[in-house]
Length: 585
Image (tube, rainbow, N blue to C red; front, side, top):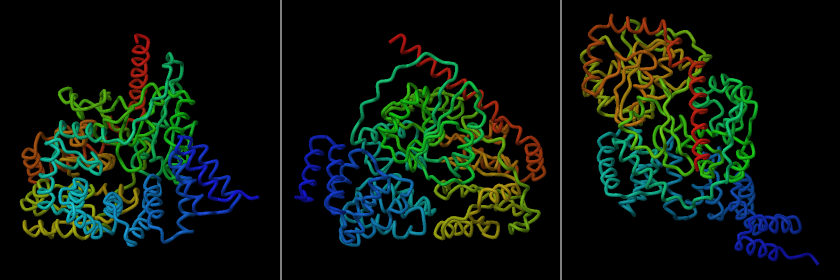
């Protein structure tokens, strides 16, 4: 007699209740083999896969379950939330919208969907969704934070400022919400102490803490084993920065890459795979399984490259799969995350007096924290006529995303244009709402004819057009990062202002490493004065540009070989200190 499907389902449920997820999965799959694709058995299979952390497999089976029961909103929600934990996260919009259209009500699901809608052409839907949440829950901190980010992105600065003020007041009073990630706050006026305190409080909301792996700290060997963990090993800003570093490692370092991002063999992924002898695709592994793999590879130093940015898997680092686990590059600030004990910065990003505001031990590169690729293409500048720019104008550019533009700095730029009719401001084109708000400010200052827009472009086109600008403009509170080094690579000087946070000091760090100390200002007033002086003396500005352009690619910022040697020394020294501490312990 064939065992009924419900018996397999009951066995699976009971095994999972006992904590035996592998047994639960086995029972569910035995039932599926014996009885066929029964929806109840697929559900049990998915529950076991959830517990095991095998998200990619679970997504596949939830897709099958949704095909069998397309009108079940619970299944659609589970599919959408699972997709959010994969490189295919944008695909979660469809099942989450369908579930909500069927009447599914959950604030967390609505917020997850709003977060997906924010970055694309669905900003209006995102705002409507957030305002509906706030109509029912006026003080929901996560919805307020997401709405503030959207308003900032659309350059609705006055509305955003009122909301930001309320959020920072609540944070100062000790409030925290899981849906308000510390990452959002990097664009606010929160100081280092506030960012640190909120990161610690947010980390304490974590659902579960894992047991770190037991690791022997081995004596230093001839070759230090360094692992790089990221979802950005493809045509992504992080890959563009670290490609030269990975290619330049000496024989004293054995390099491993642990990739959990898109498996698309584009130009950068092919290049990185060629550079790294030990490549591991870990998309299909749970956090725990990935940590065990890293441990089995006997990694000495694990370099986590994502932090709290999109696509991160900090759960892997929480297992402490290597004696030294550090965060580098991906997130400009303290993580306060389990398993990560070190943060890489430089003397500009985190001066000694700021060290107490970082949960990690701060490691400092001697010149600049940011790796750069000396082999990167440096195309010839695009003729201005092809870009629609006036030939004889002084071109000021800022190609940051619109959420980094602040009203304070935008007004500085507009006032500068008022005083210098021979200058133009060239901005990366945002959505229509943000563009209209910027142009409204330009009309207020009577300089709308001096504002130009640059459409989105591929990287080669972007670099080529950058080369035609005379000066790149930085801003606070969130300074230029890769956008700044792009301009500097193309020989365009960067005018910056030293902020009071890690993310606000990156522009100054880049400018110092490029040898442009004269363009680093102490505050916004000094920034405005220097910008005005440069525009009043266009010959001086062009002389600075010529002098810098002649040596740009040889600046310390772009000396990949020296950076790599200093980086290896930092990692080896850090590992050596870990060994010494272990011996003393």
